Length: 404
Image (cartoon, rainbow, N blue to C red; front, side, top):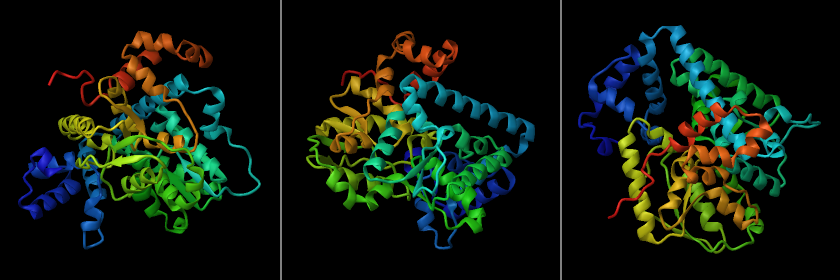
């Protein structure tokens, strides 16, 4: 991040000391403040620290310390407002895309009583339900592997990150604790996270404080798939004759490396290294450097075109929402990597989010979604607001290509 954002970190000890000052007091030297804002959470610092400290968590706490001058009730109100905004978006966008039977499959409230503990919990998090075809593909693959699993996710199983970002650490902690309690309540010994934000929030802010619960393993879903690659290979029988580049991210979670391994294992697929920098653990982690995210997306699209790929594959749901509509202007499709894995197993889930976003007109999107709106009794004003903000408004790099 320093070369991208122009940060001067020549005196690294002073920068680090300033971050600690920021953490303690809520304010620090300008360079340290800039670093706290720009950090994109890659986690490279964790392995680099010889003293066993998690600098990413310190940055997280330093951001929270900035809220100290805001009274508790204001922080609590901000957390509630942010949570309600997210929950409404998830509710509307999932219902614009899913039939009731598929919505029930992803809903915690519909789980049946079990006579025995499941092998694992698949934890969707909240926001992947805006692009629900991705979550359904994950469940389809688990079904093909013959795994007995429980599904947790959605706003009722939030990790608490929204309240935490608002400075309401008390309610964030309660939310995260409640979600982890529900994981343990299943009797499963393993939790597979889809969302890296949830993995980091629960793995670094909640679980470490629960020493008695150390037996619960929590890891990223795609890493589990690589562990089961020998079982997956016999299921990947259909050649996927595509030339694929990857929208990569950094992160010590190991996800990018696992996705690359899976793509290379798909029969017929040609993997192309676009040789682009890896920034942050997910696109939303770059919110502190929006201009850099915009430019990075533009460079990736150009690199994919020059490489002659047929497909630009993303890893995460947030990245897919931001990038998918570029398919209109660029000579390749934009998909999530799970769609390619599914294709090799003859599993197809239509990407209705992309179809709606490529319409690029709120009235036309509402008309296209009329049957779903009626099916679920959605409020038209809510639908319009969510579509404008969270479908059409989420666009880092302009869709319209300018003549070169």
